[in-house]
Image (cartoon, rainbow, N blue to C red; front, side, top):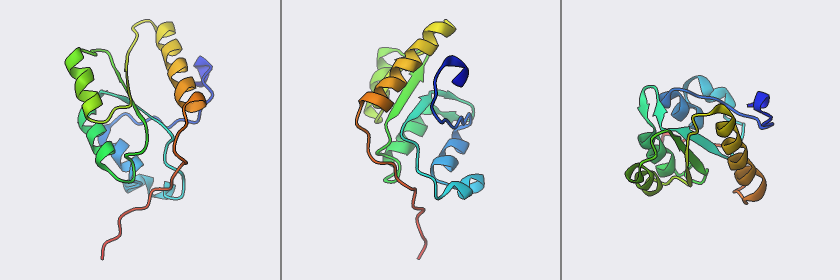
Length: 132
């Protein structure tokens, strides 16, 4: 993203299960337990090993994660899919652009709005559930 002129700290996760492990600070991501959760999640619906809509539902159902805005990106944003994403808790649905320059411009505008204009909740530290 830096090569596209986007100067944000990012964590790129390409497998659905790894994304949930990262957000919940499980498995190899336990060392991040003291780091704040992300301010924003950009979720591609086509993740290897997971349906992005299922991942969206998992994030929004989780009391530790549900406050994080989730921006869904899809190359097949049919009206039914868009409705399903909003019903599952998406904060925005963006159609992927097929031209790289257009895609980068859409991403810049999206990040500018969500990280510079919108008021977001204070960053939180994930508190793992403790067993009794």
